[in-house]
Image 1 (cartoon, rainbow, N blue to C red):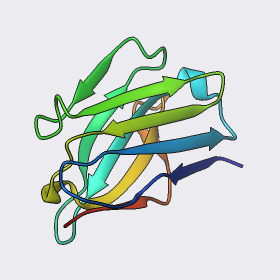
Image 2 (cartoon, rainbow, N blue to C red):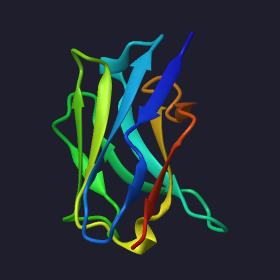
Image 3 (cartoon, rainbow, N blue to C red):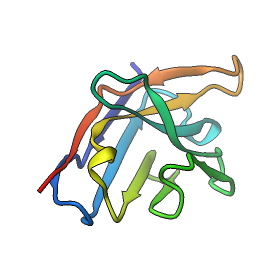
Length: 119
């Protein structure tokens, strides 16, 4: 059974930091690129960051570039999102997702974790 379980969300003040984790099981994690998406209230889901299967390649949305860092540990089947200098506009539900090298699409999704940036 495939599972992606996010954790690490919460309430943080502007300028603060959070580290999200996404633990994967039920598929060969090391063969999948992984991404973090986010969805703010009333807005469409957007891609925040992605990392290749080996971890050598990363990409970020312009809105988070320089503040967020995506990483992965294939030995632990876990992907991370370190978020620094958080802003109120980063408030959203954050989802991790696995990109299949076979079907060339996002095939697995976590349930999401809430991040709220507010004073």
